[in-house]
Length: 492
Image (cartoon, rainbow, N blue to C red; front, top):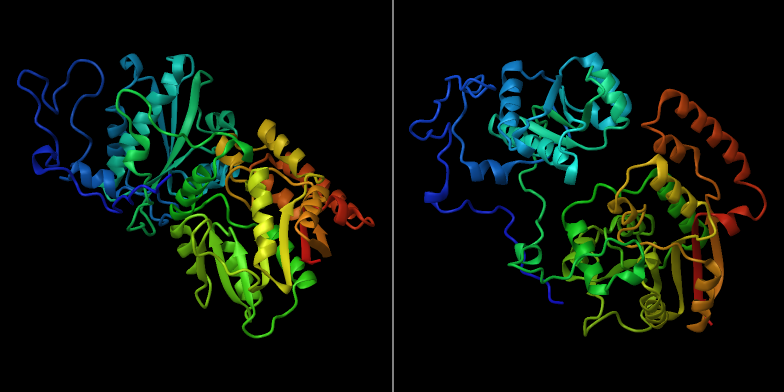
């Protein structure tokens, strides 16, 4: 499947005749004028001046703001933002929304205990809707969401920034903290404040040709499945390209993952002779490749990726810049040319057939005296159980979290070490050394996963982590049950 043309980063507004010229639009003759009462809800003018602003400019320049200045936002401006919310469409025009603007620092600190995302802005607008109104087809959620979008655009026009928070922690506790009655459903929270800095460029958008259809669907959807066998390789390439080039927020390596890699390198990979070549296969984000280049500076790094754009992105992360190759291209990596060929936490993305083909290729690329370094998540570890537990109770839900298990991106299936070693032997690669670690969740990981728990639950989690830590050093446990496994292979 050919790659679609790259969309422009800063879309140009439509033709002049199609643009609103900013300010309050003219009201048709015979309709209630702005500032006049229509007899029902507040249909008057906004509570403050409305700066002239081109609609398309507001649409294309709005950004999600994650860091805000500590300065308070005048309530007059907050009211203007809220006023934009009430002009959103709602199911059956019921307008059963409520907006609680929290600008009290102490109350916001309590909200931040439920979700750290609510601790960044001077104002948190809790958006709620009547729990039993318009439940069919989630119309209540749709109505509240329309109001949030209106408020986000209004904030942009007023020079403010917003961040749409869906991970609010315990929604019922949010409701109780701000005094909403039980029949109100907390849908989301909109953080509001003065941007500390605003990104000039927005994330790249999926091309319109990929997502738009006329009359009948005519595309190939990105699978909503974590199973590698359900993904065609070209769809995986499209998905990973979009995730990498749009900026990743779920896949920054955590301290315990970085530590596992550092320990494995120290145990398995010697310091190089000057100029030895290292090929890193499917590095995707390039975060691990960048660290490899820092930890082993004597090697000349090259990378192999699924698309040219991702390959160039990763190559630019190393110093000096790595040479980039594209998987399946006519001119690929030279056979027998590399002192080390590595594939770290990417075989879990691959269907069995692609995994077999990839390992066979790595065996050809490595030099006769070279080594193949494989890092993977162990199917015999606690990982699968913890992911099941997270999906059931202890974490955010949605396929996006299944498709982004740390430290991978995309479909994911833990690997059986014995099956992987058997596949290596089929390609005349034998295990020279192995390293396993983290047979139990590290205390710092438990602390991180429990960051939005109640104080009591956090104490229980910390005690549990302390007890588990003592089991880590039982003889043979790390090599058999360690979550992170590394194999150093050599040509037979």
